[in-house]
Picture 1: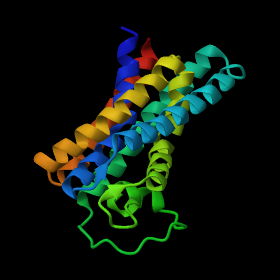
Picture 2 (picture 1 turned 135 degrees about the vertical axis):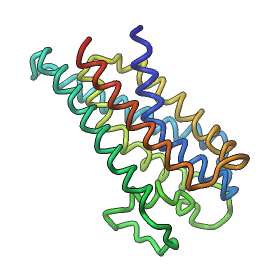
Picture 3 (picture 1 turned 90 degrees about the horizontal axis):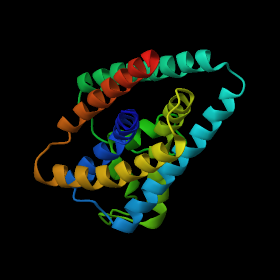
Picture 4 (picture 1 turned 30 degrees about the vertical axis):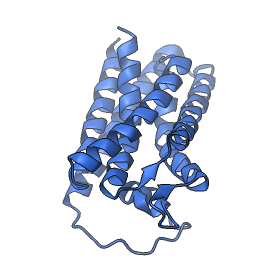
Length: 207
């Protein structure tokens, strides 16, 4: 059914939220539910705007070529995520060093060490910190949103699902991290996310 690709997209695009939630659960850093909603709202808006841009591209690119392009981008994006996640699995553990916000690898530093966002060390994510976290998590959805829009996914339903799964995955990740998993095991969710994106791209390529 048509709803399944949208759900798969929302699950995969929210994988970073799950990883962040696990890290916060392990480190006992709490996110107020209202701030979690705010983070998810930023993510949902980012998905929507990127899909709007994808629709604009549809007016320029012929439909058949657009579907091929969108599917190819999803597959390539998934392969990139998969290779990158494999590299992360083999990177030796390092002590967290001081991070300069201006560094090019700031995005990856936040995803690998989300506790950096808790700048004041309060073990609570405050309003300003939630904005920073929301923007970082939103970055991942831009390329995916454009590709998903080109392949024909409904941008309203997709953005809504992205919002809902973002809220759910941070809460779920926090619970799993605080109860069951180590931070190292959370890296495997990146591989699962990448495989979902690849499968979604292949599916959209042949429908």
